[in-house]
Length: 227
Image (cartoon, rainbow, N blue to C red; front, top):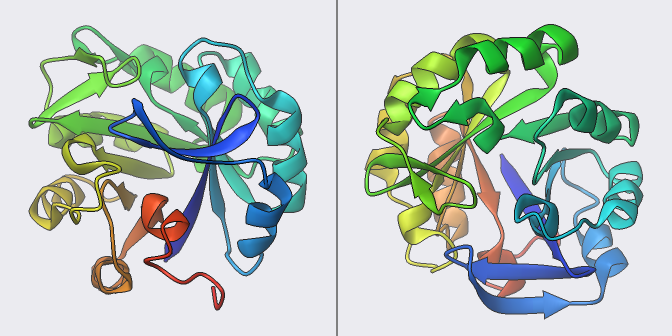
């Protein structure tokens, strides 16, 4: 399944390369939201909240009411996750809040799952150079994405694996890395990071893996008009 991505920054829809360099920005929030009407779920990320530079709450609420969304970006507390679910999010994406400098913070992950229910939690595993990175991909910790997937499995409904090495570059996703993470867990895997073609999405789908796509949609490389 293809999951289109809407990333928000400074009140605009954006696409970044490697989480840093602004490549695309658009004020047409409603237009992009409308383009994704045929999709079962949309990924909605508040980059300002993720970076601790404010938030786009009003826009997040507007989109979450209009489309089924999994929402992430700076979800650092149970209360914040509850706010997003109350605003209409179908699932919340938890990333850095599930880790500490030693690896997965299992007690914290368990707390989120006990209060929210694992069925609404997507655990985000971001990887660069074969190690998990947190805090906006700026801090590397000594744990592999495979080990992170195994540790998070009891507390989440699915896992979002982002291959940061290729994210936003349209160079193609590292399929071997994705398959390695999939082999480490029984949870549904969602993959992101450099996907550039419908063929890649179809190849992932054949493996039972969902694909989050951003840059390729906004550059017009993948047509979403038919869903």
